[in-house]
Image 1 (cartoon, rainbow, N blue to C red):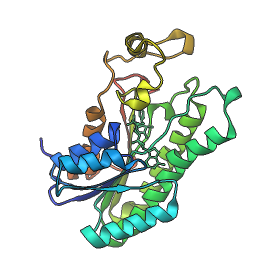
Image 2: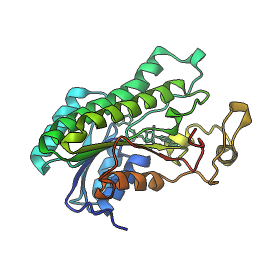
Image 3: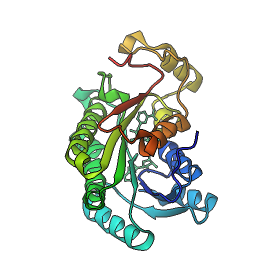
Length: 259
Ligand SMILES: NC(=O)c1ccc[n+]([C@@H]2O[C@H](COP(=O)([O-])OP(=O)(O)OC[C@H]3O[C@@H](n4cnc5c(N)ncnc54)[C@H](O)[C@@H]3O)[C@@H](O)[C@H]2O)c1
């Protein structure tokens, strides 16, 4: 089933690897032109090489509000109005609260929350003027259930979810939809960084659950691939979701039991 994104112009943050790279590729496969951005430009450059003429690569630090505005301005002047914006850039610094530093807390919110604010605001200002557009924020299922060692991350993602829903309410009457996709464990560098030692055993614990950390397993019995998350994003930005806004779509194999 095609999402029909021919001719659409999309900005993706954190597109250098993992879920962001999968989102950018999926948008291109559906016909969109993509401005792929990342703090580390290496990954987005290889994406641009893979899709010549369809993907433009730019370095962008989403924590820098001025840089975000400059990039969005330049992109629209060069390539036309943005139809789609997907916030994927994110960081995870795992630590129990008693050991969490102020720097860890601030850095986590700077990317996961402030970054979403900077990029979404820049997009919404322009999209509302034109009366059309779609914004998706990739949050996390950790925004909905308590997780040990993830207080800063989960709080920053919960803030990003509520921010995106409030924005969706404000801009709905001006033709702009805002939704979130909340993945569970997904096979990327971020996930693997949590697996100290035996990766196979760690992956099994993720699927089967871990009583010691009060963590349920994944009812569907597998860890997500980045493409599973990208498919949900593609649906939400497409016209097939034209009557959906302020929605939080969990892509976690049932891991949180949607509790
Ligand atoms: N992998 C998972 O299990 C999982 C689960 C739930 C949610 N998520 C969320 O999905 C998103 C993508 O995660 P991933 O697993 O692909 O992670 P990843 O670490 O593989 O990729 C994240 C990307 O974001 C970029 N980035 C980091 N800071 C940035 C900044 N300041 N400005 C711009 N780009 C920046 C990194 O350079 C990297 O390319 C994140 O928001 C993450 O929190 C991931």
